[in-house]
Length: 114
Image 1 (cartoon, helix red, strand yellow):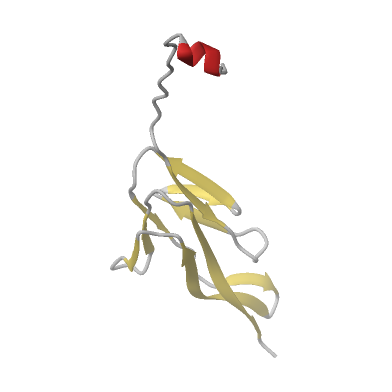
Image 2 (tube, one colour):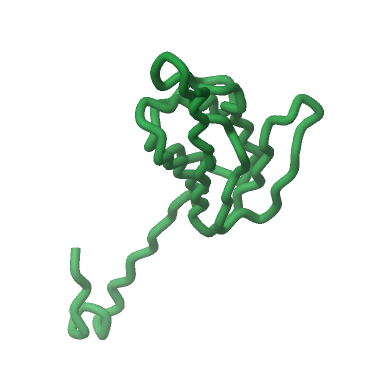
């Protein structure tokens, strides 16, 4: 609905109520990568939303076989837009979401055994 200036002059007002959501997008350059976000497995790219800022936990640190004699080894996470980040005791990444969208991407190194 559009409130025109004439409608506003006659006293018409609208109030919009909404619940702010936090958004996390996990991307990956490794084909077929799945991550775990708060206990749920997601294929990358994955986008999750929540009604409030909360901690998201995900991990995929194990080497991933590519072919006989080669694999992708996890290096680190790149995170942009998070209110805070940290590492759990088991090595999982912890991200606190705020009002800004957050993107995270794992970095891997290709390792080929001769």
